[in-house]
Image (cartoon, rainbow, N blue to C red):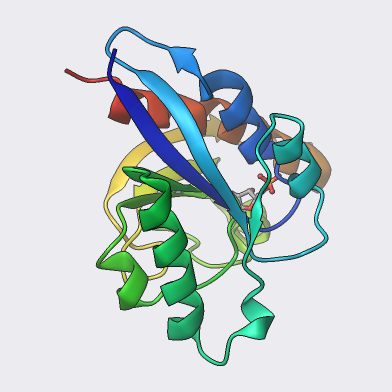
Length: 192
Ligand code: GRF
């Protein structure tokens, strides 16, 4: 049985981290077993830390505020990921810009709460909610030097209903994320 190792990076609540752990960690699929070998968080006191611990994985805290430059932080990230042996790194709510030092060395995918290439950046949910578009959605894409700009791997969309509140809209986005990210990781790794 081939074991495919992944690293998960997160910054906050960790609901996507949790879904990845529930649906993929130590699970056997047709062509491989997936193992989450490390989880890494850039903030010391966030809810996702306990979620990782609940699966027996002590997260590595790499606090970005302790580094003098983005590159120095990225060096620490890359070192930890390489050491873990992960072949794929999943950014699940990881809220840092990554430098070319990272993107050139690590094969990574990111989850973004909009239909890219629309609404890049940190206000995607709000911008997509307020836009005149009749559909909204989410994307999983490869991480490149350009923020939210790498090749799109998978997307899901839904129709915006006029009476939908912002809270309902956001909940719909998160529900789709929780399905699509684990499914995409599985599809990328579970190949011959
Ligand atoms: C998700 O909406 C993701 O798209 C965005 O940050 C959020 C993370 O949520 N990049 P969580 O920490 O996984 O709950």
